[in-house]
Image 1 (cartoon, rainbow, N blue to C red):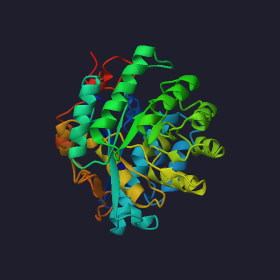
Image 2: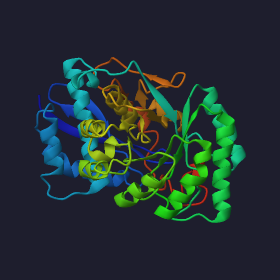
Image 3: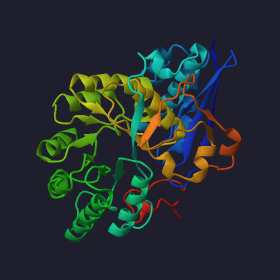
Image 4: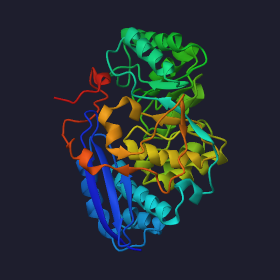
Length: 383
């Protein structure tokens, strides 16, 4: 079996253009993948086509060699843009392999470690940045069966918070805690916003509300800063979604300060790369909560990944709080029932693209999430 083509498709979700691939073979089998990256859909798409000669004509079973050809052999490293392009192909290769073997992907990696996957909700708080709005929406999420939910209460903050903004952020956290009760996990998103001193201050002030984690409190490139925050924070720190190499994880794990890691398969070049990192984290007694706030193919890939990870912690779900048509651009989209995801038994990813529906939602340049612009929580396209 040989790879004969790599096709790309973009669906214009108003808060983030979604980039998909379809890798075809001379056997008639094909696989689907995803390379979504906020603000860079066309850039990653171009990278996929530039790198495609490294995969065309190859046996799709040779995933490691193809990934190395597309990343190492170009002798340049484009971080998230580069590795998202590699991931878009790599995920599709695993889909092909699963179909060829008539097995779900997790059965090719040692089998299923869990009967079902606990999920947390993200993207549910679209609307006004007020305690009342967050509390009302949080109650709706819990009513749907979720036992965990994540949110960013910090507005458009960057590096520091004024006293007024600090009070508002803490009021939002308090309102959500009171709305969902004492036993629901609340996960606080930092989005790389703060400097070390501010992050430590926030962690101390919000500890009373018992967050499960404080995610990416400082910029991911400042690994020493992440470690310092983790050592001083009464709230567990989580991070890893922005890393694009396993070496970054190795540097972080060396300090044994952070034990909740969030590899993003797209940023890392695919799901097998993320699976390797999960094992690195397991050696440090840590747990894995992969980042999965892209599109529905990424969600399905993370289900396969998480099903095979002994140290899996919790699965991120953004899909249910996206545009209503997102479930129509794929078949068999990931669904959450009473806070859990059932693990599919279909071959490969168990999901396919609906090209006709994708074409109804074309790419638009203004579709991106401006996390440092006031009002980003509304998740509207940018004018």
